[in-house]
Image (cartoon, rainbow, N blue to C red; front, side, top):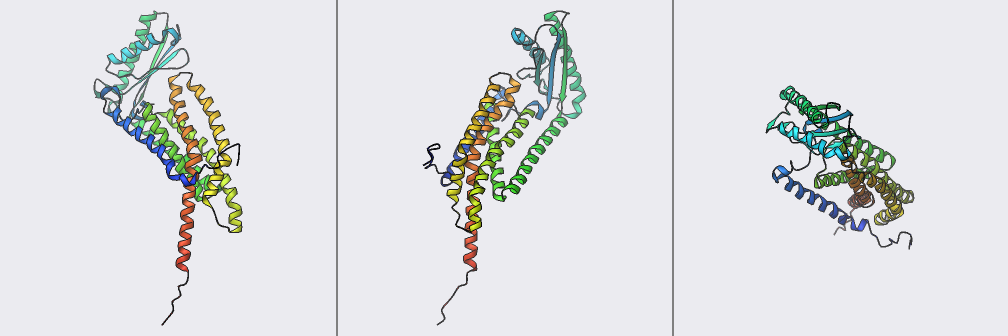
Length: 350
């Protein structure tokens, strides 16, 4: 028995059907949470917390060039000034984010007093309203700090065309990344390894989105960056496992010996398990330290990565090799059936 791993009785392939239970539970919880959010009135906005980047809105940046810091003891007062002015104009501001010590960023949908300005035909009108809000914010800060303060407020409009263009580019970038990974794994290993790796990556993405829905993390450009980061990281662990699978398969193919799928899958996972766990833990420590900084814009990027790291470790160790084994088993069974069908049938004539 390998004392280092102490996993001689750990069966991966024979329990392949059970590894789907945990993801299914998480998906179910996400569906329940999303349903509750979408039916809870004005407290939440929709099934998922779709950010301004993807649904359209305005990004208001307020920056002090000379004067007191925007953060620290002045943060709550400064945030209150900005949000009150947006609300007076009929907007619904989101939580503020800081940029350094001299800037605060607040986002709000292009819907004022119940009227939707997100349509392209109302872009000029929304720009005019945003410019007025920016001027009112500058005036509000001068009223609080005096004329000596140098304040700049700028509003960036993201309308329907810009948001749909960003969605298209995000979908294209993720799809292209998955396609290139599939091609790479097929070339390096085989078709089944490539398909299993992609299924594992899709699992990671679904679990990431489930976590984002449950925790109400904004779905924006930061999430797309997190997704691509996890795709690159997760496939690395999967490749390590499939590298061991190939080592076990090579002599069997050469000798045309019987292939014990369960043995190959279990042995490959056990050989790489320590490495997969340790690399995931060390990465989690670093990423968790970033989350502890407490910056909201950073957390929108870091928390999905933490979810993706855990999901990626799970899929690389349990789901990807199990799926490969199931496909190999189906292939062997099909070949046996074809061989039996081609075998000559002898009948004794009377």
